[in-house]
Image 1 (cartoon, rainbow, N blue to C red):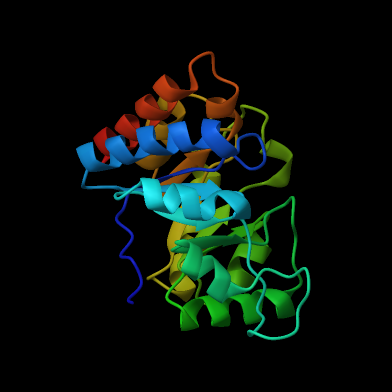
Image 2: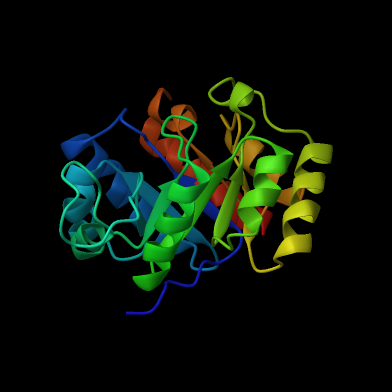
Length: 228
């Protein structure tokens, strides 16, 4: 199995632990319909581990993503997240080093290696310019540049931050896609962030806490497609 090719721009719906089970599955199907409607972009959906298989089986056009994986081999590792188990469940991408689940550099190195072994796309989070530059030397597929202080605030990164992080990362490895997603809460934020030069963006609470989450998800994916 080869690694899924990520199209730019891309959009990631990352419901964290706000959604699970049937409610998550319903939104996954909406995301899948939108991804089919807009084939020029990639749409990811991040799931809790227990929901990965159900979402993967119910969808055809989204890239199903895990919230984390550990750089372990089959065998010992009770309580760790085995990359092979994620792949078997249908995950084709994973987040690493999220602000809510930080990792050491050694752990990130091992996790990226194991993900690469299995053609799992890596989305590695960086909360500063220096961390983004350090992570770029590990050659993940995507770096999410997200100042921790802006997460969930509704305040987005400004143009100078987006431009400077893009330049710094691509100077090290031009193949890395740069995601900017801090504070995304409206479809307009999605358009603006991509127009300012991000390869992709994403959202959590702007969708999960919306009056109509399905409509907000549709609007944001459409905004990403139009911003292309």
